[in-house]
Image (cartoon, rainbow, N blue to C red; front, side, top):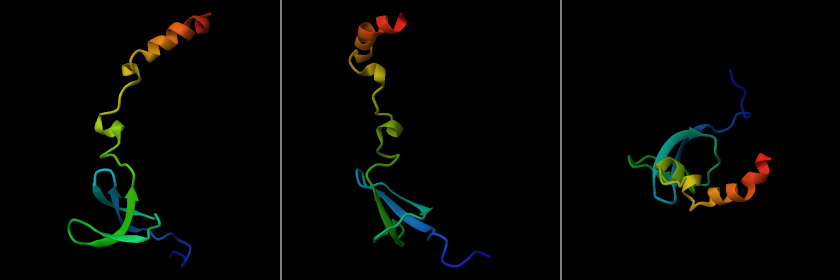
Length: 86
C-alpha cells in the first residue's frame, strides 16, 4: 500500500490553449489555482497553455522550412562553404 502524504496530487486537469481556446482533459500533477468547466459540464482544475499541438506551427503544418527562408542558406554556404571545405 502507498504511504500517505508523499505522492503528488495526480488527477484530471483541464488544459486550455489561450491562443485558440482548444480544451483537453488529461491526468496530471501540475499545480493549479483556478477551476474550469469542460464542454460536458464537469468542473476541473484549470491549467492555461500558451500553445498546444492545435496551435503550434510545427504540428499544424504552417512552420516554414529552413530552405524557404529567402536564400539565407545559400548565402551562408557561398560565404562560409569555401572555408569549411578546405
